[in-house]
Length: 140
Image (cartoon, rainbow, N blue to C red; front, side, top):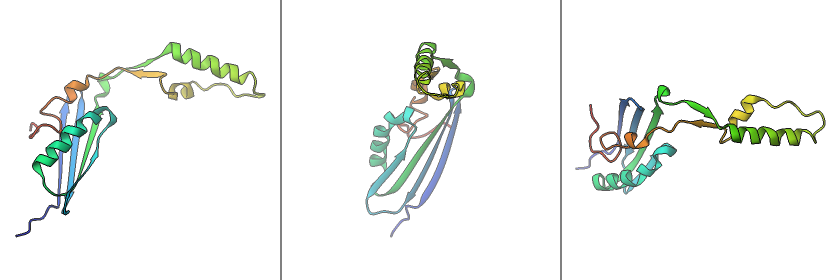
């Protein structure tokens, strides 16, 4: 008897460091074809997740999406003042050779990669077994 592989599941975990939300969708397919969407900060979980899928499933198109939202209170923004100073100095140097150059917008400086540094969240706590893909069951 043929069994359907069409399914959807969603699981969310709230912790002091933020929240993780897994969404898994599957449809019947002749072979196992996993599609993984993970945040860059959790990309190293891709290997264990693929291995777990191979152990648990033999076929199906399976789409796994992990969303990570860090707790806003656990992060603070810090300006890399040395780098920002170098960036402003370079912009002023270029502006001196451009006729009618516009003034530098501080928000544009903050958008430059490396100017703003957020405090590093301990990602080991986020990846701890029991919350991530390598665990068989999430806590209720």
